[in-house]
Image 1 (tube, rainbow, N blue to C red):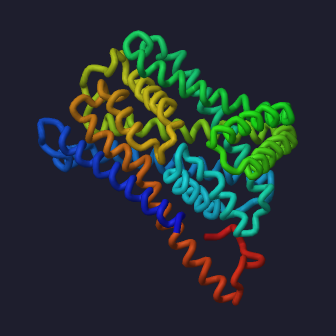
Image 2: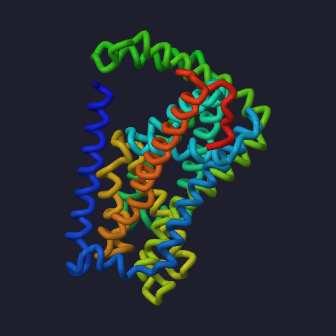
Image 3: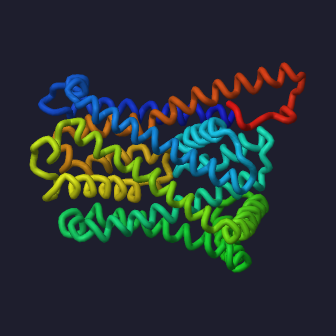
Amino acid sequence: MKTRTKRIFLFCYLGLVFTVTLVLAFALSREGKGLFSILGSIDLCWFIAALCCMALYVLIESWAVWYITSFMYKRMGFSYILKMDLIGNYYGALTPAAFGFQPSQIAYMKRDGVPVGISTFIQIIKLMAYEVVIVFLCLVFISIRGAFFFHNYPQIFWLSIFGALVNIFVISMMILAIVKRNALKKMVMGITKLLAKIRIVKNIDKMRDSVEHTLDDFHDSAGYLKKYKWKVFFSCILTLLQWLMFFAVPYCLYNAFGLGMLHGHEGALGTVSPLDEAVSIIAMAAFLFLAVHFMPIPGSSGATEAGFGIFFGNFFFALSAAAMFIWRLITYYSFIVIGFLIIFIDGFLHKSKRKQNGISGKIPDENPGTL
């Protein structure tokens, strides 16, 4: 009953955020024309380009996981990995700071016969690649546009720096878990005991087991990192391309609204060429992600919408609300809708297979290479 109540509350919360976002988009649309009038005037080619960027984001992410799986376990069907990725993104969208992404994929892969240790190591390597790439992109964009943002938009600059520091801290903890497991275990358990004293952590034994298991997983993954270092590096390259696609979505929407130098307008934020403008908008999207992604709210809802207005207000001007609404539909709500459908269909097919085999538990010899 508790789980059902939590789910109902979560969907009510997301429904409320979606409704508020839609109302704001209507209320703040340019010259009061309304959202649908604005949507009818956007450039269809650039809008399709935004959708393609998001599709490539998912496909490249799945390719990276498929590639990691192929050398750590065995070559599996790409369609199966794509399904796992969409399921992971669904649970990531519904949990604070996307905490449900990796555990959901591990659980589904376990159901389909993939050893938990293998799926855990796959997720660890993918998580490491993600953290390294996000910090790398942050450093690159700060070196390119950091001085401008620092002088003209200091709040954006410092929010992004804080987000980058959070990611650097996570990477540092991962490295410590690999090279100094026992020292990190003592430190984490010390913090856990303190949290237990002030009643934030209720079951300290369960927390201790969880901490030890997680640290052991990271420590054991060191062998894979050393053995497959160049393949892991290639996975980082794929992850880099994946996130560049994600950050390019606002740029496509910017052009879809007929703004910018490609449409004969003055460059945003004093940019001097279409390329400079594109880099600035992609950098801004990366800074926005860094500033809000660690928020302990599903999908960083509320913070992301407000952040879009702050970060992109000087790009989209009076069209900011409409652009934000479309951007969230493409980059967030689409994962919830598609993921829900995938989980529903997958659950139905899985139950049908169980009935056909006359088994109430896991299906033996299930082929994880198919949907």
